[in-house]
Image 1 (cartoon, one colour):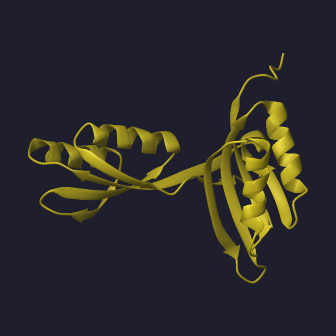
Image 2 (tube, helix red, strand yellow):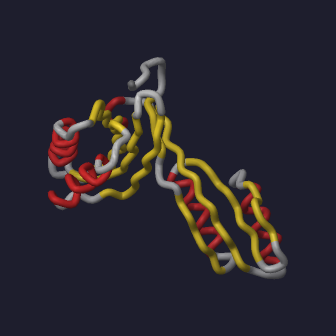
Length: 171
């Protein structure tokens, strides 16, 4: 039987009109009801139609997730709300820039770790590297954890961008 009290992680894709205040209204919906946003990414996806896509990751019970979706659909001007977690197969990616400051053998090990994660070296000095790594959130977190064990790190993460797989276009 379905456990309605179980907290789940969901990735939601929202297609909105690209105009001032829309993002504030969406965020206000979450803060006003005490819902948490783990990750939020926004970008214009069609300049001619003035459309932006908001990808957000949130957690809640199935009932809370359903309430979030319904309240998002009522927002103006929201054109589409898709719970990609429920919808089926989808692709999620995140990008991170990770600066590591270290010396000696730990520098060589940092390069080995970066190579095994297929991270690109964007900058290199005698004391530091900046790596770019893309992939799932769990891959990014694992990379950060390993780099943190090799030196002092600074991190910039983009957040999750996601879309459903297959031939269906959300416009």
